[in-house]
Length: 237
Image (tube, rainbow, N blue to C red; front, side, top):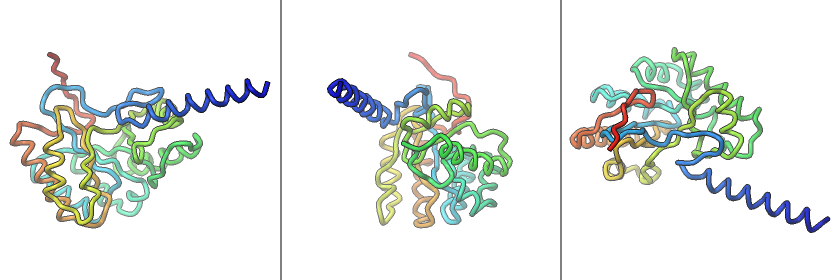
C-alpha cells in the first residue's frame, strides 16, 4: 500500500512539473488559448507597456505616441492607477487600450482563486473608472500563469496576453535608449507583440527616446502599429 501511494505521489509530482514547464512558455497556457502574437503576415506590430502609469515615463511616452500618431496597449497596475488617476485617464482619453496587469504585481501562481479574483476585480474597477467600458485583456505579472489563473480568466471571459519579444537591455542600468531600440528593431516579425515598461520613474527621457526610435525605424521598414483590440485581417500564403 505504501509503495502504491509513493508511486502515485511521484506520478503527480511529475505531471505537475511537466505542466509547470509547459506553461512557462509565452506561447502556452493550461486550459486557455492565449495571445502571444497577432495572427497576420502583414507588417503589423503591437507595442504594449506594463506596470504604469508613472509620473515620469507615462507622460513622456504619451507625447511620443501622439507625435507619431501611434496607438498602443497599456497593461496597468491598479495601485499605480490609484496613485496617478489623472495620468491614467490621459492614456484612455488619448485613445489607447488599457489592459489589466493585476493590482500590485504579485506572482500569480500557487495562489487561491479568491486572491486572483481580488487582484483582477480591483484593477478592473479602477480601469472602468477612467471611462473604459470593458477590460477584456489581462497580462499576468512576470507572465506567470500556472495553473489556477487560466480558469479564473475563463470564468471572467478575459483574454490572457503574453507577448513575442521583451528587450533584455530595458532592465539594464543605466538605460541605453539606442540599445533597447535596436534590440526591438532587430527582433520584430509581422504580428509581434512587444513588451516595454512605462511603470518606472527613472530614465524617462531615455525611455521615450527608445520608443521614438523604435517607431521611426519600424515605420521606415513598412510596419504599422495597432492596439490589441484592433481588427487585423490575417494574410495566408
